[in-house]
Length: 144
Image (cartoon, rainbow, N blue to C red; front, top):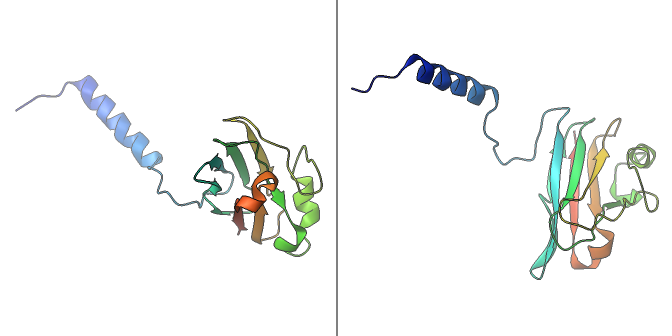
């Protein structure tokens, strides 16, 4: 039988404590309040998309949009495709806008844009990438 030294047991114990405190991601797009959810912006010869295309967050969380490929991308909301009365709050939570409810272009891989949903009304917020709207690049953020 193999004997473990005290140092090895201490490392093993610390590893188990860390794993219990930080479980592996489940692949779901739901996150605890205060977290920032990442959405990838992808474009290639096979298509343009947001990954995940549907994200669920809590009021107060942020969504970080990161260009992976095929930029420039952006995030645009149509007032008709968000909860009634939500446009003013969303507008305040979108820095560096090109136009009302239209985020800046995010051209290069690893460039990002963050939108905070502080004070947002619960409901579905449908969005699209303006440069790639005709290619079907769209998504939904469900705010609970």
